[in-house]
Length: 364
Ligand SMILES: [Zn+2]
Ligand SMILES: [Zn+2]
Image 1 (cartoon, rainbow, N blue to C red):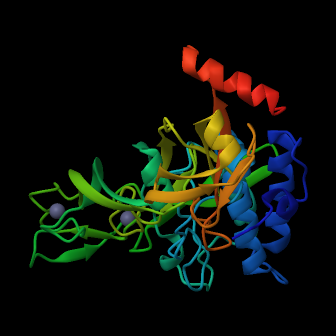
Image 2: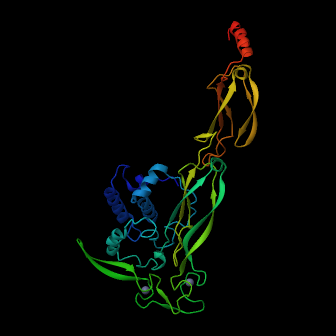
Image 3: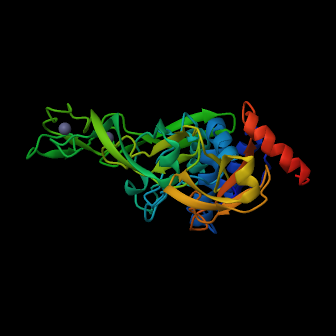
């Protein structure tokens, strides 16, 4: 999962959108799987990099968080066997219009369809959904299960996403001969290109229901309020985002988009997080600092008794191993660091003053 998208496209962090587009185009041409000597794996990688870096919003997220997205358990945009997959391009990725780029060179290679499995390589993909989720400090340390309610597009249950009334027949689309695509010839600066476009009659499905489904009116999908269970892993940080693959908008005849959950962690009154360590302060009176003592402190793991050594001074740290934040990468937990502070009374009693004068005589 730790891929450097900049390296994949052979560009730097300072590259402009124009340079990114150019680099992507060049590499996509070079490694296109339909081409002789093409490399499907490389091609997918290049596309993945461009999906992120070609979109200003996703790029800045990537720059800030790097590879912090979890849960990409396959089912990604490019997993179709055989032909490659356009999923997620026009839909889902915030209007990156790379259709243009593809059409330009696909025309030259005879389009995507030539022998590599025609319709299967062109599955559509539902849009991604992004939401914010606020959790408490404790929940960020230990992880939490949450359910969220989202209005999203889901496949119609009545017709199973087919758009046809159950038991009714489905015909092959006459306009595209069942391929889902139609050829279009376009003129451009470089001459005329033939490209494939989605058939507008069957919406790229290649089939038309004889009796459209009554529930979804033949679309195959409906808007529905869904409750989605989220498993927030322990150790998540403020502003980190989690990707739940396939939990975005569903797409009839295609794959579902992804759900991105951006986490906001509420600050804690006592604990502060530094890396995977937790920091807290403990105020003690002079006598306990000098003589040492045993103290009960309230930690996120409950009450714990700690030993303050003799002759402690303000600013000293005590370290409780394994009482910090879970580290998903290294396993285990960070430490709890307790910073000691010597607390002075607001007023000095007559008696305390007398005792301190004696202490002064002892050189303390
Ligand atoms: Zn059609
Ligand atoms: Zn339906």
